Image 1 (cartoon, rainbow, N blue to C red):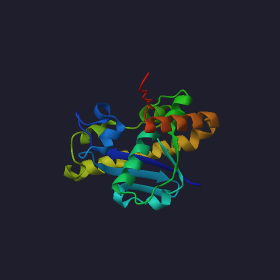
Image 2 (spheres, rainbow, N blue to C red):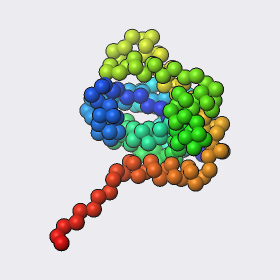
Image 3 (spheres, helix red, strand yellow):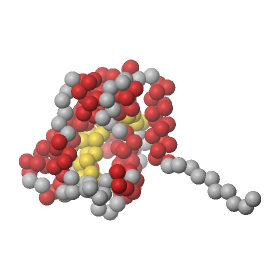
Image 4 (tube, rainbow, N blue to C red):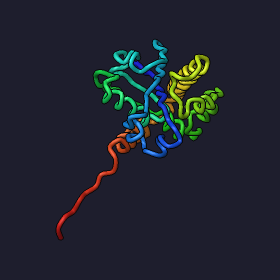
Length: 193
């Protein structure tokens, strides 16, 4: 099984974000565009539109992401929208959870700095807040593509360098938590006396 890091970029505004809508409502919102995906592995380096991504190469493989619960939700939304034609049936791992277990910062900026000695620039994300990617100047589009690919590479190398320090029980707990968050809170309705 091969490992690939995946990082999506989506449109967002002050009034339409994960913070205002929650992950699933934000992704399902008709104005939310999934405009870019960066995929990185030993035999693959792709950044571009999700519709053109080599999804077949990832089917049934191991996908890592920094905050996998979000990328997992985006993958499912891509399947729902028909961007990914067949379910990927991937095995997923969260490098943010792994970083937290290793007592490094959970965010990618801090984790890359502490665990890889790499300084990432996260200011690029602000350049497309409230904007459509296709309306941005070519040099800004290139900067955003480079930014997305750098995030995917950092995630991939975090996994490659550090995953063997993350115990299997902790990995299972991470996966279980991600499944719980994607399913939501269970409620029981009791009627009568």
